[in-house]
Amino acid sequence: MGNFLISKIIVRSALSRFATRLYPFEKREPFSATRGHIENEITLCIMCGICQKKCPTHAITVARAERNWAIEPMKCIQCGECVTVCPVKCLSMAKTYSAASPTKETILLHQETPPPKTGAVKKENA
Amino acid sequence: MGTRTIIPFGPQHPVLPEPIHLDLVLEDEKVVEALPSVGFVHRGLERLAEVKDFHELVYVAERICGICSFIHSQGYCQGVETLLNVEVPPRAKYLRTIWAELSRIHSHLLWLGLFADAFGFESLFMHCWRVREKIVDIIEATAGGRVIFGSCKVGGVRRDIPNVTLRETKTELALIEAQYNELKQTFLHDNSVKRRTVGVGTLSKEQAYALGAVGPTLRGSGVVSDMRMLGYAAYKDLNWEPVVERGGDCYARTIVRIREVNMSFDIIRQAIDKIPEGPVDVKVTGNPAGEFFSRLEQPRGEVIYYVKGNNTRFLERFRIRTPTFANIAPMVVMLKGCELPDVPVIVLTIDPCISCTER
Amino acid sequence: MSMIETQPITVIDRSELPIKAKELSGEGYRLVQICATTGDETLEVTYSFDREYSLTNLRTILQKSDPVIPSITGSYLAAFTYENELQDLFGIRVTDLAINYNGNFYLTAIKTPFLQKKSSGAA
Image (cartoon, rainbow over all chains, first blue to last red; front, side):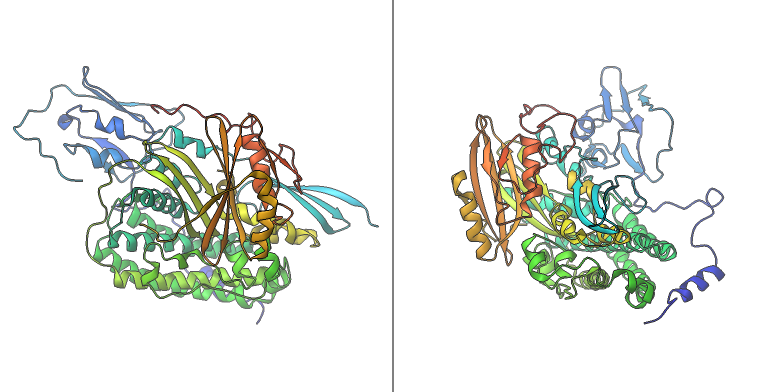
């Protein structure tokens, strides 16, 4: 029972350094497991379209004939389904979040030359 | 006979985390009647079961609410796994338990902060959220996102937590628990907090049971009822018991939640010590058929998931009854006869999560 | 994870609902939820009750041409939130409701949005 029982915590936090970061001068290093945004190593992509089928929000569009792979970052929910099902592992989850932007843009990646057809495309079990 | 006025409370109000509207009928300064109306964040999520197949629906279930997100996905996965007759591997059950208890701690710390704000104690609010930041950092380091975990799937969990990370988490949680124990002394013993919460919004044991209250609202009135006793996930292997208080007022409900946070720290420690090795998911084939009611304990109370499958990849019916929906009736009864400044305290004591209520 | 609890569902006629609800209330059951499922011509309304962690359910089947159902707020006052939701989302008319919002509980843009089944197909 008592009054002002919080004074110990208040005095300690008044005399020690800030509990918050001085953003933007001091930025936080993201954790290694953070799901930030999707990146595609386009030289390895075989344009199979499995990522397009599995995406829950239809953020990915694959155009096989033109060899284009497009993603709308504002639709992406960073779930990682595409990374799990990609058979050649060209898709990966990067740690930093996509920046805020006043317009919704699509990122289009074009593949100049298809990847060499090796005898066995190694299918790693997810 | 005093003068009667009608005062609208909400949907925009500084203490409300989410929009709910109450029409308060006042006689001088006492509330005589309260009429709730909801519907400001109704998104009709249950209809999405018709266009998204049952694997993708986990992502919708997670996003019903930001505070109780993991347990929503866990409840959905448990319901569909029962329909498909799939047994989840033990390591996945322990991981789900660890994440669910982390979710409970962060939700209760969020509530403690908002509750302190409801009676004007802003510095206590900020310190509760400062402790909560560390929990949210642990969640991001293990699951990938701060509030939306993205780690539950039908058949298990999507990612493993390596044993090294689990041991580090255990040491960090011990430090966080020490800070939390210091903070809870203010809630439990400070005279100003007691003045605002003792004797406010009293519900007797029979009233709470008859009105269908769930969660800490029910346990604060002396009824022993915690859905984790059903033994889903890893709860039947761990040593814990439901937290019950007899007071029936806002102070008793606060004590229930405070003690539940300590109980959750203990459950996580036991789970990290006992977690077995092994795979974290099983392959799922086929389509769900039949119907099942899956019940879990969310931080706010008992959540019930009704899933009905008809042998196609789309579920026929997907219905969620969240705890705040069941607690609206007791809230309306508690508001009768209270003073106007006590209204925010009573509205917050049921821990309203309106986006869950309205889906 | 497979739960070994059984959850019995008893199908009854809608006129028996208030009587059965009174019986269950006398035996110490609390109301857990009320939910409706849209079929092609029918509406299935399921009531769930619980006592000491065991769940039991009552179900009644309504035709879409005659969606009227008696209220159980006589025995369970807490049912008013669920029954108002049935009125607003499914267009079911509930008689003798203790607190009746007459369709204004959920302020939706379209009336009875859950009544029509959308044909399930490609997302």
